[in-house]
Length: 332
Ligand SMILES: [Zn+2]
Ligand SMILES: [Zn+2]
Image (tube, rainbow, N blue to C red; front, top):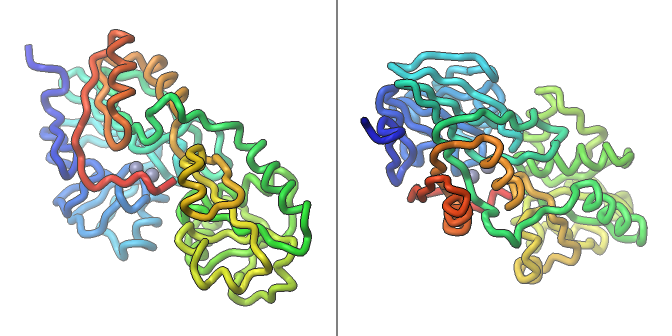
């Protein structure tokens, strides 16, 4: 009998489903690419044909220009070559999907990036039992246990209200994290205008066009220092320590990222208020998901593969590392 999943190949530039002649999240231009979500390390421009959710295609058009794209809704099935393909919510960012591939009586789930906790900006992760689960492991170490999101947002609001002469500048990845922080603040009753850096504007608009309500937003570039005192400003992490922030009233520098668990990272980036808010599964979510799906094999991609591989082995699950290149762990 053939090895399990022998029709799925792992190459440095991506995962290739041979009987579909299609690549998943390839880092090089391909004739047919299935894209899990819009983060730039997964969704690159230049493919001859792209299959993705409508949200992901819209994000790719904003970031990489026009796509020869076909949209697939969650749970809609399509046959590509000899493979049945289905996209299932991954709970990572707007439009993010796990890709379910079925061929020769075997089911393979490619998770892309995912998380299990609720996020008001996207559909929750749907578990699909499978023979092979290809998982990310960005936070694949037991030290990574993300706290409750609401309590991190409360820390942000407490800091904001403790000194109304200052603003709180929150560094948040422009796709996903920025919009999630805004909606989490709204859910905690924060109705004041939220100011934003120009780099997040188009993605804010895109989220709103897909029905994610963000409340009153204002461009920080056209506001005075006085207006922004006592308010929250959202900017991409790269803007935290650059000249741009000089226009703000004595900012308290915050950063929303799973990496803020590591104090040294917060110090390196001059972050005064580290907020541990992640769009990736933490250690407990990774291991709970593998238990729940009960796959025969786990293939592990970008991240700390070694610890998760060891965990799988001690739980009698065959596991291996895939050496894909080009995935970054900075999208959080
Ligand atoms: Zn991602
Ligand atoms: Zn990723």
